[in-house]
Image (cartoon, rainbow, N blue to C red; front, side, top):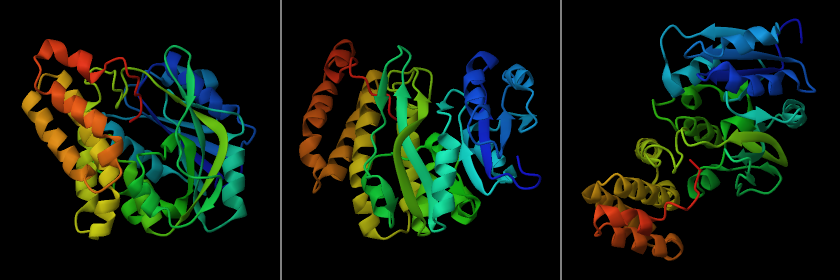
Length: 322
């Protein structure tokens, strides 16, 4: 590691126990690139034994005196970061050994690229893997704001590295929502930073029922759907109408996810309102056609007795995405 400023600050918000976080931490410490610091903000203290086992001076551990929550813990760690480049690894995810070296090389090669990201593999509880969908081709992309507005949530913290200059102003003004990291990506694009996509799968995102956004989780994804819709309402306020129109597709899909979760919770009246909201957003876009079967199915389910809703909604559909 360098004697002064590290090349990369790896920020690890932590809340799980040592048996879970050990893999994530080791995936950082065994990288083929060693000029980094690891900043840990532990919400519970349960991960401390894994840090002690690692006994690596590059790891800077801090237990939060009170729980900060998703947004504040991330911001606190990123504000402490000293590296030229910054990245986040959540405590249940992990990286391939060339993650850091590959993304550092991208940022070193082009000073106009503010963010570099790689392909991500989704790992579920049963050992199955699948690629995380990404709407951009390999290489550099300028003017990505329209893509971020038009496409569903596709940039992930655990697969992205950015220059510390990006972490300024609106990019670090996160709301207390579980999707607050959208603020970073949208603000960076709004500021004109280019994005580079490396299609090599170097990041792994663990999928499990207890995590935020799991449609098979305890609330069927209602919490994250509510948060994403609230985020978009706030972010679009006062912005040009064309930007809101571009985001109609993703917002319509989140309304549908919200409606599905509400139906499964027995909150039929609220589900009908969400369905109407999805239909209003989908009108005039290709979603009016592609999502019509799902709209019809959810609308039909909203008029059924609770015991019949689960069959119509389709609990067997696997949808781990946030």
